[in-house]
Image (cartoon, rainbow, N blue to C red; front, side, top):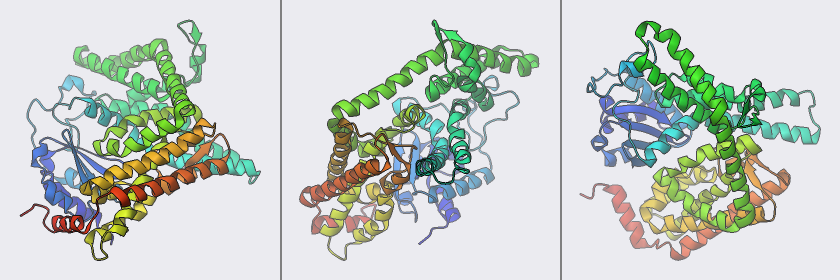
Amino acid sequence: MRIDSSTTAAAILPLVGGPANVTSVAHCMTRLRLGLADPARVDEAALRAVPGVLGLVMDDGSCQVVLGPGAVTRVTAAFERLIAGAPAADPPAAADPPAADRPHGADAPSPIARRGAAPTGLRAVLRRLAAVFLPLIPALIGCGILAGVDGLLLNAGLLPGLTPALTAVASGFMALIAVFVGYNTAQEFGGTPILGGAVAAIVVHPGVAKVTAFGVALAPGQGGVLGALAAALLATRVEKWCRRRVPPTLDVLLTPTLTVLVAGLGTLYGLMYAAGAVSSAVGTAANWLLATTGAFAGLVLGGLFLPLVTLGLHQALIPVHATLIEQQGYTVLLPVLAMAGAGQVGAAMAVYVRLRPDAPLRTTIRSALPAGLLGVGEPLIYGVSLPLGRPFVTACAGGAAGGAFVGFFAMLGDRVGATAIGPSGWALFPLLAGNRGLGATAAIYAGGLLTGYAVGFAATYAFGGVTAAVAAREAAAARDPLGV
C-alpha cells in the first residue's frame, strides 16, 4: 500500500518536537535527516509506529527517519513545505550567527536552516561531509548508467552517430564535479556557496597547467574532489574573516575579491599539490589493499559494513568513493561493501523459513525483501535482523563471505568496480565496471551476491536463534512497543 507523503510528513513533524525543534532538513537515498535543537523531545516509540516509517536512528543531536527510496524524496519535500509554512520560532539570541559571519545581504536563518551551536565530534564531521556529497549522488548515478550504456555501444560499434553525444552527456558532470563540491561545501560550512564554487573551479581550470608549485607544473583536476573540498573550506574561512573586519560600505567589493584571491592562491600554491598527493595515495592504497590482501580485506569490509551503516559511520567513505571514481572511473570498494546487503537478504530468508507460517514478522520480511534485493537494506535491518539480535550478526557473516569472494578475485587481478555511489544489490549491475570486461565483472559480482545470500542464510538458520519463542516475543513487542 502506498503511503501519502503529506500524511506521513504531517505525522512525523509533531513527533520530532514540532517546527521549532527542527534546525535542519535533508535526506539521502533512504533517510529523512533532521537536525534537532532538543533530541529529547522526539517520541521514538510513536515515530516508529507511523505508517511508512521503516526505522529510526537517533545520532548525536540528529534524527534519521528511514523511509526507503523514492518515498524519502516525496516525504522530505512535504516536510519542508510544512516547516516553511509554520510560524518562525524566535531562537535564542546566541543561536543565530553574527551578521558579520553571514554573506552580505543574507537574511537571518530560516526555520529550515541550521541553528544553534554546531555539534562536534567525529560523527558530526562525518555528517557534514556527507551533506556535501549526498546531493551529488543522483547525478553520479544517472551519469554512471549513461557512461555504461555509452561504453557498451562503443564496444559493439552500434549507433556511432549517437555515442559522441552520450559521451558528452555522461561525462559533463564529472568534468565539473569539483565546482559542485565547492558550492555544497561553502553552503554547509556557512560561507557563500557561489564563492566556494568559484574557488573550487580553479582546480579544474585548464590554465592551472601554466602554474608551477613546489617545482612541479600543476595539472587540471589535480587533487580532484578533495582539493575542491579543501579549497572551498579555505574560501569559507577567508570570507568569514573578511566579514568581521571589512567596513560594511566596502564589504560588497572587498570581501568576495579577497576571498577568491587569497583562497585561490592558497589552492594553487598549496592545496592542489597536497590534495593531489592524498588522492593518489587513496587510489594506490585501495588498489594495493585488494590486490595484496583481497580476500581478507573483503572479509573485513563486507563484515563490518552493516554496523557502520547503523552507526552512520559509512558516510566517511563517500569522499573516498568519489575520489576513486574521479581517478579511475570506478570505485573498487563499493562492490565489496555491497556484499553486506547480500548477507542481510540471506539472513532474512532464513528467519522467514524458521518462523511459523502465521508469524507477523513474515509479512514484514515479504514486504522488505524486494528492497533488500535491490540494495536498500534499512527495512530488513531495522525491521528484522537488528531487533532479533543474532540474525544481525549472522547477516554480517554473510557479508564477510561475499566480500571475501570478490576480494579473492581482486587478488587474481580481476577488479570489480562501480561507476557511481548509491545503488547496491541487483541495482548495481548497470553500474559495474572493471578491467576484465563487463561479462567477467558481472559474473564475479553475481558470485559474491550468491555467496553472501548462501552464507547469510546458512549461518542464520543454524545459529540465528530464531525459534517460536523468539517469534512470540517479537510479535508481542510489535503489538505493545511500549511494554505496557
